[in-house]
Length: 417
Ligand code: AMP
Ligand code: MG
Image (cartoon, rainbow, N blue to C red; front, top):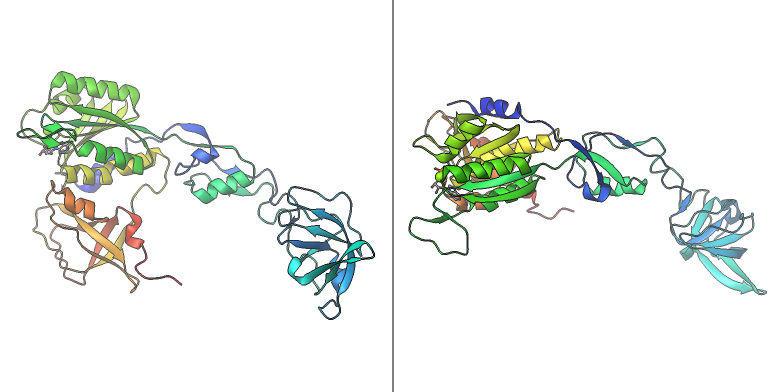
């Protein structure tokens, strides 16, 4: 057996970042910026009005109150998207809407609630019922972004706000690391696809849709390469076609020690694969290597082993290909709400667990159920893998590291005010 860190080092050493491609900003969600992006413009592009009301020279409103209003004529109306036809002079007002540019000559806006409009000798006139300072309800040009400001640094994982910010400064496309195309193959004579009914000795091929979903959830494009039975020619054809079409192949089944398996025979003949026995439970066997320069992950067939193996080896590799500088899941120290015991077997155990952030400010963890490597029920109930080192006996209330496989641990269990 080799250690988990040795296995990870071997694999991650062979992983290369994807090529850089240009994509529309709107398609960049979850992808990683290959370079720094600076703004060519200032935002707002003009002194922008933040409130419906009247543009004025602030000094004109000095001393105004509801008992001593100041009256000035309204000379025009400016909606968002329009500009004033002339300069505003002292002693004048322009009706103005949120988002419109402040007219030249004006230095403030008084909100509509502090005004009253009337007709004075045929002239529309506004009464100011309060005094405002210069700059009132005005967003100065450049108060968000100035030309040359860095809006996104290299390595940023694009979130919706980045997409909004980039678009606000007029950027249409960005350079990112391409989403790897990841082929998923299931192997095994016993596998059947729902809704077909099960014959004697058959089970449903649950790994393939699960791995396709894990690949997509990791931010990559999954390519479903189907199911192949344990026939050497068919297995060979599946891998050969897969490496033509995909940047990575993830297969499940056929990597355990033991009898002849066509997966082993084919991969050994065509590629340069490492057959590892890793000191972890579940997911001890793993094959990894290159087939015509394409990384191949041969995951164990047991569904929980396949999922844990994906988490520990494939997912970080895919995130590295995507250019993510933090490719690993979050690991946090949690309080065990029940004893976590195990026997010593030289392996690190990954216990399917439920973690939740509690209002004592700590993350608490308990087992998600029966821990067999075929038992998808506990995996589905879990949001974390609790890490039990060899020989660990964690008592209730003791500390244990957990790897969070979802953010649901942080769903507030109390109301945030
Ligand atoms: P193997 O690694 O091929 O020896 O398979 C180990 C165990 O995992 C066996 O019980 C298989 O039936 C099961 N298994 C293999 N592939 C799948 C799959 N795609 N979906 C569900 N179970 C599988
Ligand atoms: Mg098999």
